[in-house]
Image (cartoon, rainbow over all chains, first blue to last red):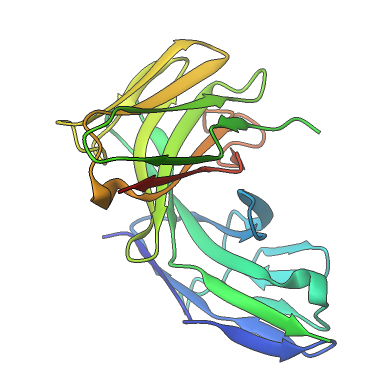
Length: 117
Length: 118
């Protein structure tokens, strides 16, 4: 089946530290991959995405590269800030063929990041 | 910024009561999703609408949950009767449907409705 596995949190870092949040997936076909971020008390926001193998998504200093050979989409940032404290969700988009067909997002469990000054 | 608006933000109710959650999608978006978020299960897809038609509600308990879009500016999720296990945060998200649509698969989420059933 289709699924996303993320590293368990919480991840606790000091400001300016390097961040890696691991994400691996299983899917039939060639899904698009996403990272969404959820700040406290808010809904999820798209952080970055990649639609095919070897694509690199980037936004706000975060990066993730679509690795088909390792079925991974790890999130990285070179220097985290306190304002990056949030829950990060890896997701993949799969094609649902019934009901007229649509793209369904399947989310990982989320990884909480806490950055301290 | 365009945003998805959900009401109520918080709801505390007693078991057996009816609960209705509302969502105003972004103007021009033709797809609406309802997700439920719990600590144990994470984010679960409950229902999907495109052009106001319910196309997939396989993730939704049919005996007590119902989802509708009476018009393009309003989506509702109703639970009747509610149970303590329904306690969760319910998110509505909207987007543009279709593989060839620029920005397809990019969803905008509302801030969620936190439901507590006692």
